[in-house]
Image (tube, rainbow, N blue to C red; front, side):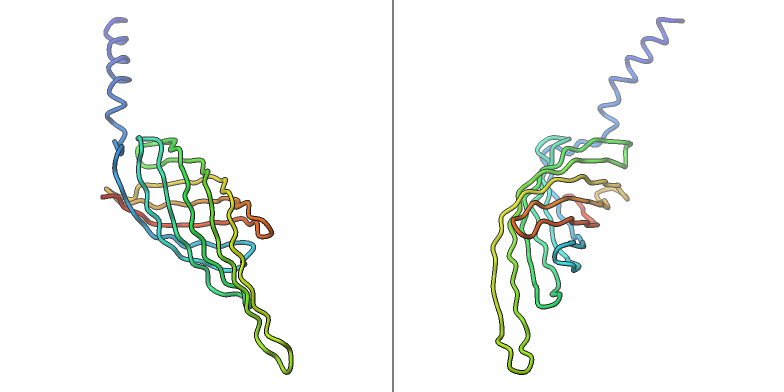
Length: 166
């Protein structure tokens, strides 16, 4: 009886790798909406994801923020995620990556005040974590919280999105 139980456990453990989805080499895309604390404005964007392995995913993205008090911003990022499965449909992942943003300010002219305009280009680094839930086959929702280390403009960025893979 002990042998049968031991063999059952061994075969059960060996079959677990087949129970988890195999994503290696797949590509997908999605949309996201988020909020940046420094720009103090919502943004929308697109992201791609490429699974280098089943657990390592590379995610380039572009986000455009709406203007707020004369300030506008867009950002391009390249993040890496390490997927930690919690169940067949849910996963957590730490985020690390690089960031590039364009900050533009243009003041409105009031009475005889001079109009002020400037543009700043800022590289940075992203660190954070995310959660994803597979809604159905090839469709997932994700939620991310990351801190963006940017000279003069560091901020917390929260986003939620939908994605699918091909």
